[in-house]
Image (tube, rainbow, N blue to C red; front, side):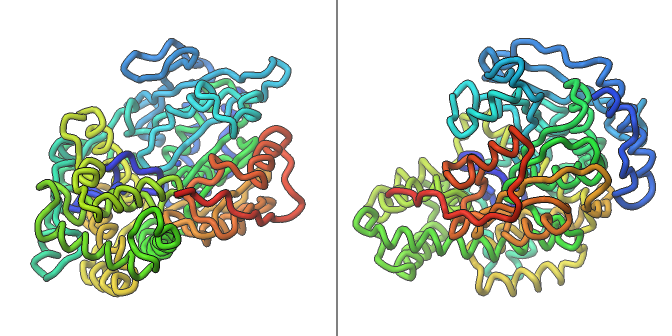
Amino acid sequence: MRGSRPKKRVAALGSAGALVTATLIAGAVAAPANASAGSGHGQDREARGAAIAAARAAKAGIDWQDCPADWNLAKPIQCGYVTVPLDYAKPYGKQIKLAVDRIGNTGTKAERQGALVYNPGGPGGSGLRFPTRVTNKNAVWANAAKAYDFVGFDPRGVGKSAPISCVDPQEFVKAPKVDPVPDSEADKLAQRKLAREYAEGCQERSGAMLPHMTTPNTARDLDVIRAALGEKKLNFLGVSYGTYLGAVYGTLFPDHVRRMVVDSVVNPSRDKIWYQANLDQDVAFEGRWKDWQDWVAKNDATYHLGTTRAAVQAKWLELRATAKKSPLGGVVGPAELISFFQSAPYYDSAWASTASVFSKYVAGDTQALVDAAAPDLSDTAGNASSENGNAVYTAVECADAKWPTSWRKWDRDNTRLHQDHPFMTWANAWMNLPCATWPAKQQTPVNVKTGKGLPGVLIVQSERDAATPYEGAVELHKRFKGSRLITEKDAGSHGVTGLVNPCINPRVDSYLLTGKLDGADVTCAPHATPKP
């Protein structure tokens, strides 16, 4: 499942019938210290290719202009492109352009510490909205904005950066999809067929890009962007999948890192990327779904959905059964419901709005739920963006690692997990199943570890995160020597650094502004619980 914020209604869990909403110059020319940190042949060639591309980008710089009108990024944000090789083993071969944007630091020239580059996750998320944190006067980021230019980019395959596609976007969002929870072997067979067709569609529409849609390549792209910005070292903020991008970058280019903040951490262990990581999510989602139900029950005076978790769950199961029998408004079945309700276990910020729509439905207003959960076929730009995000998600996860090809294994693992973790398990399985028949080469994941020159990295994680379970932060902390872990206790929102927490925000600021980390790991109280 996608580890970044799902776009409204349709983003990630989409492929196989479960549409569920489912991260200078001197430095540029030297090959990275840890060139062979990855695995398999070609790593040294790719390291050399990355050094060549970075040297070229350092020389070329970025031709900053006002952003094109249809990018919806108003002045003073500026936009440009950075050219990178499609295949780093062939640095003089086919090139692609990556879209980047920036806003200058808000402080004085003397206060400026360079660029802070951001990845929001996914894989498949666009970072181009990052500079709007400055134009929208986001208070949490005001101190960092004094010192840094805020730089966003669309990773390879995403949005404005040689975008890939696997299916017609209007087809992709069509509803209702099949219920992801199978009732029979025939249901499973139908989903397997959809997954296989989705993988074939990716090959048909984007085949030339697929072998190169890997996290290590995106990390090399990040180093070329660093060079193009004129930065000797990278300052990086990665959330969700962006933490894995940061972990791989830190492994391949340890001496190119200046400051790195990773928030809501993907477990970087090779054993987890990506099949097991998705199974781990199913367990964590069930836990956070229960947290939300507890909160709804506690606020029964507002929502009237029951005074216990069991009562709220009974209402959910009733809604699911009703929509399965006859999709609400003809378009909202169980798959669309999971898409919509999934944002509650993802983000506390969605707790109240999700509960409110559910409450209206139970009180007899079906339309509110249809409006919230059904696709908007008139939003062709949004639908294209959702389809593209799902294509990149699938392409990167399928290319990063070797996936099980035995259906028996998928069936056994998901059937077992579903028994106690029914909220997300099958929806997540179908979303990832195209990787079992993926038509392009699958790599061995990079062995994430500390290389020479890697500075202390700041890791921030909530204890009950559903999309990136807590163990991932502990694992990265072990692998990156000298890192510090801030744990937000009794909290579970995905993406912690953007929330107001007086224990966390000043520590992130202090690290970005001074490079100093606490002497030991820190446990913080949770941010404020959502108000009904």
